[in-house]
Length: 162
Ligand SMILES: CC(C)(COP(=O)(O)OP(=O)(O)OC[C@H]1O[C@@H](n2cnc3c(N)ncnc32)[C@H](O)[C@@H]1OP(=O)(O)O)[C@@H](O)C(=O)NCCC(=O)NCCS
Image (cartoon, rainbow, N blue to C red; front, side, top):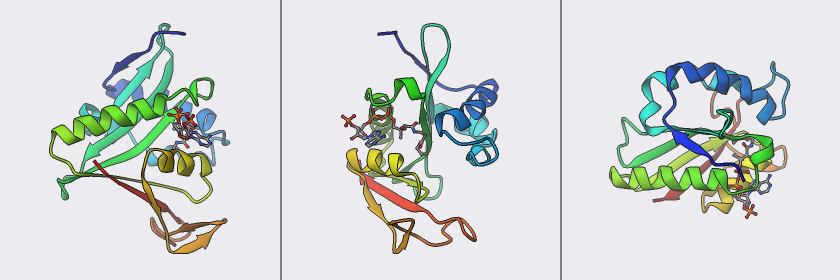
């Protein structure tokens, strides 16, 4: 079992994370959700985000999250990813646990996240961590909010008390 190193991401990590997304999400680059993770998250949300590397410095996981600027009782997890060979070992659960503790310490009482209707892995993961999943219209076999993020951009929402 390799030792893992947790640290805050730096702006220069952005390219590595973006390059990992098509591989980790198992999608062709043109379909992968790279555009959802612009560089600004590594500039302005680094101190509430985490990046995990193995002993060789290889990227194995990341969590991009923050405390809401306009709803200070709410923490928000924007993106999480774990390298395929490290999945199902509790790494994302651990990253979420650390984020929950940090946000509780800042006074947050709830945490929110969203995903796409087709991302069943993300839905199973969030439900396993105690998130309530919501939507109001069946899309691809699950309840989602239609056009939540724009035309055709349907989303499933998650919320959990902290
Ligand atoms: C979703 C993801 C982050 C989960 O990471 P992980 O480190 O494998 O998750 P964990 O090992 O902490 O899993 C915790 C629990 O979530 C559930 N879970 C996780 N992956 C699951 C899967 N593929 N299918 C069903 N349940 C799953 C299980 O209940 C699991 O507990 P268990 O292994 O004891 O049964 C990972 O699969 C991933 O990076 N996927 C690609 C990127 C993505 O879709 N990110 C989320 C959208 S932003």
